Length: 508
Ligand SMILES: Cc1cc2nc3c(=O)[nH]c(=O)nc-3n(C[C@H](O)[C@H](O)[C@H](O)COP(=O)(O)OP(=O)(O)OC[C@H]3O[C@@H](n4cnc5c(N)ncnc54)[C@H](O)[C@@H]3O)c2cc1C
Image (cartoon, rainbow, N blue to C red; front, top):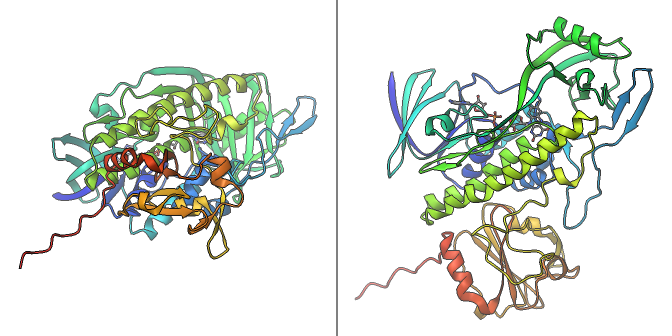
């Protein structure tokens, strides 16, 4: 049977990137369909590190506490020597929260749990994942994309305004567009498997063979499950037996003290590490995100986080363009996210080199809190010292006091699909007119909020008579003086934020 349907956005691939985009569009009321060729949700733990910046994104999407409850903190590493010695080390930087950075420690959540929480959120917003539907072809014209998918009811043709390809490292969408995916194969092949294992405690990530890649093996207890994630490099060529018996033989050979029993295998895979970056993220009405646009080694736990944040950057832009914002806004998606992926590729490859030597220490460089878009055309130039907060930077959290006396976090003001404009001691006559999609807050003696702790004054460097504009994805867009109203107004128009015009009174 061949059926026809239409929607605004078709999202191909219900991994972390596709799910995040579907949630972001659903909370903006944009009709979208999310398809995946798998018959059922992916069951593996592979991307288990949730970085602090992603935790901020999860807070905005309304799933942070559920994510924390679905996972836990990284356990200490326990290095087992060939001579039976054991040494513990905390290789993941655990930093206490600050007012500006409420989350400073990576979380560990198995990827199947992360995706389950995202699916739950999507369902709350009225969305579903359509499993068992495979994108098999598409064509685009000036108005939209016509896509074909094979599913349980046969072939379906769907017409949409945009197609988002979040279909993983072997992306059909990327290949169909003929987009190059240059990079390198890193000469490392590894096993990753979720196993039931007897013989090791669950209070540490157990490793051995550090410094000699051919002997390395690690068992990480996956929080709130009875599983360990086994990770180990393997020879570049040759068959690998991923059954329980095969993994038992593998473990017996590698684990110095012996005595471990593999009781079951929930999921297992052998893969080659690559570092590759798509030449383009956009061709007309088709966009790439996540692993479809960049792949890299798992070292540093960056892939899922970067994929999800691609979608978080894309969601508000797609929604804005669909509501009439200039199409050029969508070009800023590639302009902003591709350099971030390029930097992350270098980081993950560097960490892989360190891991080869047995060094698995991770610090702030993997937290993604310092990533920003200063270079972007969406960052309104400002005369500020290099080390001060700049347009493009992540907008820090901080505490204000509401006029009724209660504490209010800046992140509470930013949370949701809108833009946020905060004016510090600005003459109301100089404020931009209210408009849909923009929340305006006054701070100062006569404002709705006070800034007793210097959240805006010290952290943002905002003086009396100045405004800060924050994007829907939590980056500073502009830091301007109220006297610069024309520049601010032009910026707002460029991103589709225009005041509503009152209907003209009809002549009698
Ligand atoms: C061992 C290992 C450890 C890792 N550890 C980490 C970590 O700690 N932290 C981290 O951030 N990342 C980690 N990663 C990386 C992370 O798993 C990926 O970056 C992440 O899954 C990418 O998400 P995605 O949504 O872009 O793609 P995917 O998760 O690959 O999802 C793509 C989806 O598209 C579907 N699809 C493909 N083609 C079609 C089609 N034609 N039609 C319909 N559907 C289609 C697929 O079925 C799939 O469900 C790790 C990866 C590995 C292998």
